Length: 185
View 1 (tube, rainbow, N blue to C red):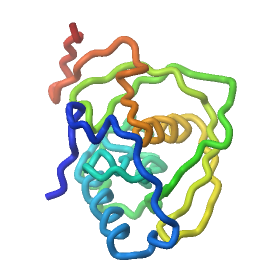
View 2: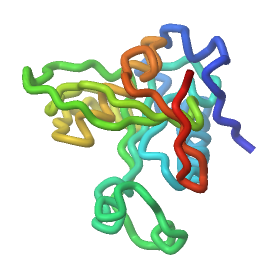
View 3: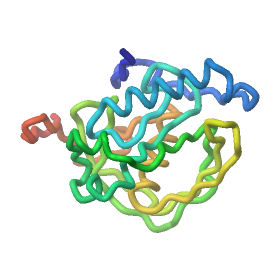
View 4: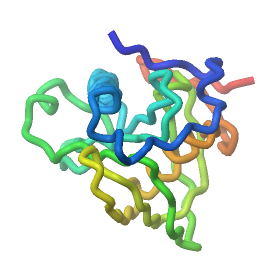
C-alpha cells in the first residue's frame, strides 16, 4: 500500500527535483503517477497530491477529477462512496509545474492537507493562477485555475518547494472524524 507521509517526514521540506522531460513516459515515472493516483483516490477528502507526499522528491502533482463533480462541490468536499463509482472528469497531471501568473486579488480559504492530519487553517492565496507544466504524456500545457483550483495549484506547488500550508496558515485547529474541533496550542 502506498503511504502518504506526514509533516515530520523530511522529504516534505526538500525542494523537489525536476523530472527530465524524456523520462516522463518511462515506466519509473508512470509508476509514480499511478502510485499518486492510488493514494489520492484512497482519501475521501483529498483533492490533490504532490509526489513528495508519497515520499518521492519530484516536481509532480495531481488534481483529482472529482473536484469538478457537482456532488463534491455541493458537499464541500465530503465524498460518499458512490461518487467514486461515478464517471468523473479525468485527473489532471502536472509535471515540472511553473506558476506563470497569479491574480492580485486574494481570498482567505480554509485548507487542510493529506500530510498534515488532522489540522486545518485559513490561507490567503490568489483567486486566479495560471500554470505551465507537462502532462503524463510529456505534452506541454497551460492551465488556468479560478477559485478552488487556483488555491490547489498554489498549495501543491508549495509542496514541491518544501512548504507546508501550516507555514502560511492562521486559525490552525484540528478536526477529527466526528467533526469535533480542538484548537492547536
